[in-house]
Amino acid sequence: MKARVTVTLKSGILDPQGKAIEGALKSLGVDGVANVRQGKVFDIELAGADKAKAEAALKSAADKLLANTVIENYAIELKA
Image (cartoon, rainbow, N blue to C red):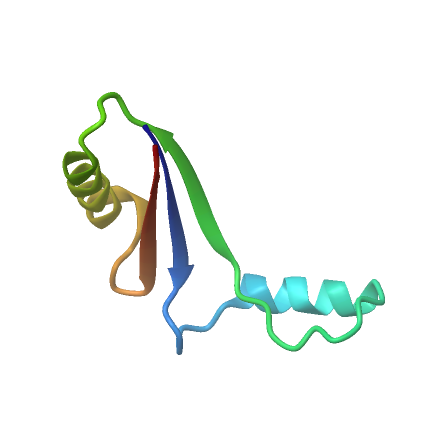
């Protein structure tokens, strides 16, 4: 089973890297850029086919390692 865990900063948390990317895009002439927020994506392959068990394991991994839950949110997407 494949999964994707997407980690993003919570709204209200300053994102200096996103601001730098926004400035770079504007300097490259990309029109209409209003706000850039950066994040992390983890593509993970899991053994087994039990979606509930996989989601519980990924939630535990995200809470303990993949995300700083004080300042970040995460979303888990399972793919069969």
